[in-house]
Image 1 (tube, rainbow, N blue to C red):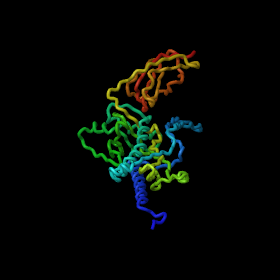
Image 2: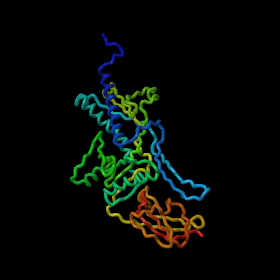
Image 3: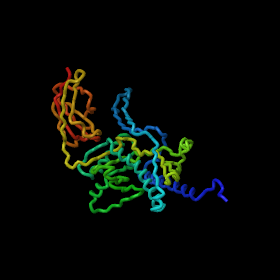
Image 4: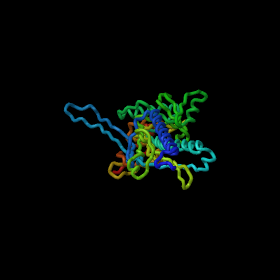
Length: 389
């Protein structure tokens, strides 16, 4: 007698167990990473939502006002720049029946599932590391140890200026820099789910050890854990299910959907993963990027001045172009050129966007400085002002 319809068979149980195991392990990995980073609960977003990085600043006005006088507003500004659109990413892998025959199920399917899981994980963290490298709180230091210290210091200083908490600082370094610094000294390195990290090192809560592909030698990146957010699209969205695409998920925070099936027409075991995850640092100027320059010296800018568009204005041109897009221009006017040394803090000099005319008097001297994100002078040049009569 034939088996009754809708009987749950061994193959159904095996497939369900495999799907549950996959999504559970993926979720546990991310739960562990969240614990290591100290980030908050992931935030669910709808597909198409645009994530924006922020740059914040505040110009404090004088608090000394007379009795009955109007109190001036301090100017606060937050600039937003689109970073990424939340999308649903689709992945698939297949294992042939021949591979299963030659190597056995556990090797052919089980080990490839493991590799599949880690590749999906790396797709998310790889984008995150690339984004961290674009942080705008840049500086140059003479040693790796100083770069490590200043990256943390710059982050704390920035968040104090924003009146925001920065209680746990997370660092990212090249693993070769660490071993080069330590020499033969031993240190306790923890490893979980493909992540290598150190706890409580050089004042950092956690430091992640990255490869050359993820961070260049001589670079230290730091940001507060409070600045890191994980956004995700729920792969069990009801609209997907209505379209006949049902994926196995796990837990209340559904980060990934997974489905496996046998394709009889090709005799392969197919696996499909669906996810939409973005690990993101919200404030771009809350990411410190410190690079080591072993022989720093002040670079030279060629500065030219010509009559500007309006009376009393001068048109300034500078070559070469900025070495880094995160660098800034500062200037000072006077009767003579300013003396500038490498690393000098020029934060209180006047800002210049590199294009706008500057109001100046003909015959005066203008000194232009290209500074890093923490206003340390990198290059300098001067010119005698020519302004429009």
